Length: 59
Image (cartoon, rainbow, N blue to C red; front, side):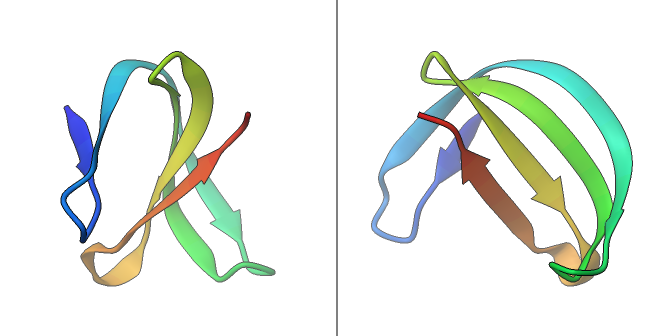
């Protein structure tokens, strides 16, 4: 699996480490949180309403 940006850059999702439901009203998120290894770094993917995905990376 890959994250593909609008400019067609790709980030490879190496592994999904954890999956859990999330409700974070301060950020307006209600959906699922996926903790992943992305290009060797820990990141979070959030799926929310309206089929939108959000990415948070840790460097």
